Image (tube, rainbow, N blue to C red; front, side, top):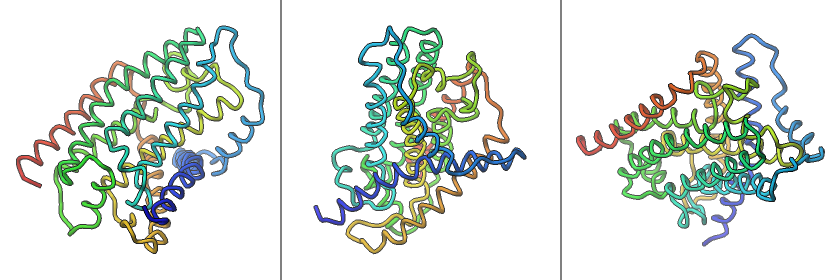
Length: 315
């Protein structure tokens, strides 16, 4: 493995850690502008993390050591997920060890740990949020796997780097199956990242919140790690959408000079994607929790239709 591969790998993880809070700040700023409110500073998530890391962590008396360890496990899973997704280059040393299916497994491990930690504290809202989180994950994971399988049919591989190389660095082709998979992926992304219309990240209503109910008992550095992990998850899903459906600009393997082009391309795509996400959240309303199964079942159905279209058309 060349030094450029390790440079690309380290740069991908460092960029994810540094840019994930910035992406959250940009989305919040765009949403405030669209709603006619005074926008917070784009660096507000960094200031929030700085404040939380310097605060004392208060632990519930009934909490076990598992409650303390869960934020570190969740943060590690999200950082590793960002290292698997090709953001700047397809030459990543971690990619042969973990494909798209393993990536879904990483997200599942983080979900299980944060859900068990929420129940470990013994609060009613923690258990409520854990049940809702596992319920949504149970519906979202099959749809996400179906999206990956649709994309893997094109490259005959479940490795994300192989999929990106086939889509971005081969001759241009139109794949109707990816249109269905793209819509399904957007639906899954909204659900997995607790965004409108599935969940409202800004709500504090106990009967409607999902993500916030999981972390009510956390404070200090533990809460900072969870908030940072949530930003990393959104960043990972954004990079996944770019890699699968808009991979142009990602550097090819053994082409270090292309990294200079890939970096501004990533910034531009992230800025555009964050603005579109803020627009969708502004135009949408949060749906009832009982409508979420229909929402994610539709996503799964669209992903399956994408696979059928690929088999029928051969593209």
